[in-house]
Image (tube, rainbow, N blue to C red):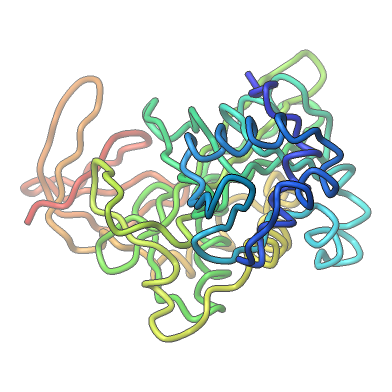
Length: 323
């Protein structure tokens, strides 16, 4: 559930005041957030516990370790294409939440976008938790409802391609690791998760994206990871608000048109993005674990693996590259 102990509007006001990296007095923070002094101290203590790099200079002054731009729904909406701005009914920004995907699955109507500064139980592939430290990642989910029950096989791959192309346009030479992880130089940069709820007259879909923007070097993650700051090398990392808008502009048309187009228009792009192509891989499924050589995907998005003299196709599985 959403962490109700931190009211988002008041805490967002605190973050906005602190965001420039300047030293702020307790009185100024209280004025900006319309909270009493004790409440300001309580919420700042809570945010620090969740990983906000906040220094208490003295008894009445606070300062962030570095400046950052808080997520802002208005700034994101201003950077959407005119057509998309009409289709997106609302953009909600939370300070703390367990999972943006879960929130939309339980509360969303069509055309809703949800972001959060911090996720306590972000959802990843294969039931894993997506770790999102404070302000260092972009955690975003969007809801899209389809009439009836369209065939969506391969949609996650098409969305991964859209995300990869968006990041490449910024200068990050990323690839896609089947089915929908974004990698840079063999390390995970972003992950995608699609969850659906099928009802009698429609299919409600939630698409979640977690992107590492700028992570602390001492963070512990159970797999090789990287962030956008590293992938862009000498280029500046765009603000998370600009990133969110760019990714929405890239992904929304895929959600909108995929039932009509299917995966076919995206197959040529996959060839240039495939991180597994001709790699020795291990595929783990509920029934077996096999080793072979990855040789692309078929027209439905299934991973093709050469095992001895036989080519096998896998619609689902956990894949690792054998070194």
